[in-house]
Image (tube, rainbow, N blue to C red):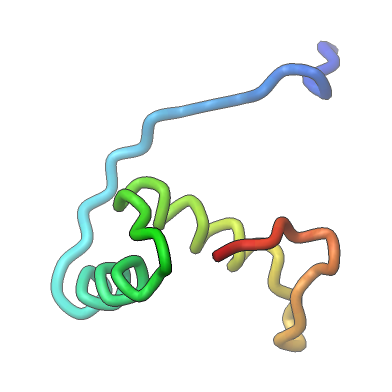
Length: 66
């Protein structure tokens, strides 16, 4: 088994958003002080979702976001 602790894994992911979910992502990213690209906005939102706990609180080790 290989140690991947020092290796940064990456992948290109194609995602098609339509309708209200696309509008919600667009509204969110445009509400940020420095408007992120769509890709960056999706990365930020996914990081936040993964850091969220089931009780609605967030992990204290989560990176500070804009």
